[in-house]
Image 1 (cartoon, chains in turn blue, brown):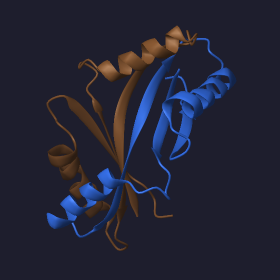
Image 2 (cartoon, rainbow over the protein chains, first blue to last red):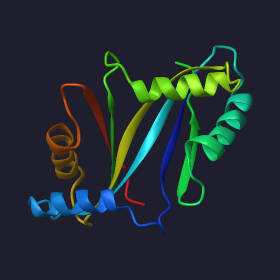
Image 3 (tube, rainbow over the protein chains, first blue to last red):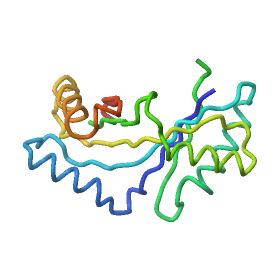
Amino acid sequence: MRAIIQVAFKKTVLDPQGRAITQALQSHGHEEILGVRQGKFFEIDLAPGTSRETARSNLERLAAEVLSNPVIEDYEVTVLEPS
Amino acid sequence: MRAIIQVAFKKTVLDPQGRAITQALQSHGHEEILGVRQGKFFEIDLAPGTSRETARSNLERLAAEVLSNPVIEDYEVTVLEPS
């Protein structure tokens, strides 16, 4: 089973890297791009037999306590169907 | 309209940051976690009226030429439905 945790700055927090990318792309003629925000993601392989409920609750805790800074970042946990 | 570009190391390339995270989580008792790979994503706001086809072809080119290093990284472009 796999899961994805996405972490990005809250919308209310300035994202200087995203803004730099936006300006670089616009100055290269990409006027259709209004804004870019950058974030990171963690693709997590879970042991077979882990229940979805256990996985989700463990990963929610990890995302909140270890993988993100809840003062300035939001996170989103997605548990994928076993492939 | 919004789009997401995900960029991550190719599966064949060692991801030292992902490996460090894996080891840290396992040593904290998360034996259910077999592996973690880290990547980044770009959330892109596109001007209203941009066609999906134009958006996709522009973003594919940007992803390949500017936002990723095709020698060691893979990318994935997802154009989201207008909300």
